[in-house]
Image (cartoon, rainbow, N blue to C red; front, top):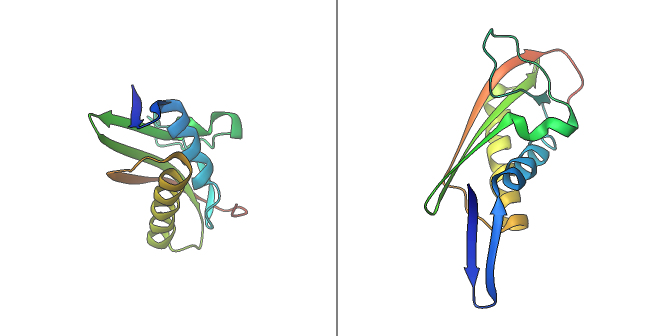
Length: 120
């Protein structure tokens, strides 16, 4: 599904993949992250996603005018997980509202793992 925005000049259609990729890139700008994890982690092993697959760590659900995001992250050991998650939510909301022009109703953050490594 896609998000549709109408104004006096016409209609803009934004695909879910664009929203997911933009959100994923915003997440990776946050301090305290090692990376993002795939949505479908079944066995508890959180695999780091590469830059080409960054949108696979973001689930986008669009219902009528409401946009909901679910983010799957891996945090760096030693960081305050609550603070990292809060910063991720704020960064993603700001980025999507200012750069894409859409309002996000809810952003859920799933911490899929903690790893020792450089924060990005």
